[in-house]
Image 1 (tube, rainbow, N blue to C red):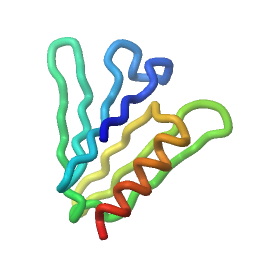
Image 2: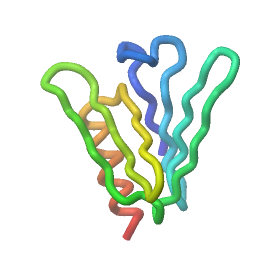
Image 3: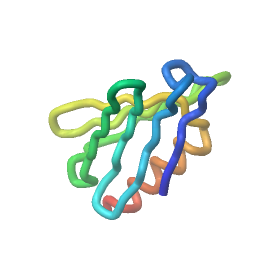
Image 4: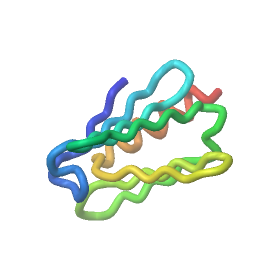
Length: 92
């Protein structure tokens, strides 16, 4: 599955962030003009997920792993809840 952040959110004006849910984990792609950043997180390494859904605006997802924290912004409330439920389902 592939989820793309909104271009209207902060930090995603030209190149929106993408979350790809794969068989063994998630890939977070943050494209840029000269370089892009791609991070793979295995489902086993995800300790918890925090979702900040403001009343107005876009959600912020925070993926807590054993050693780091990955923050992704610009997804709708429905997208963030679907991402969370899919990851929790695949972790089982």
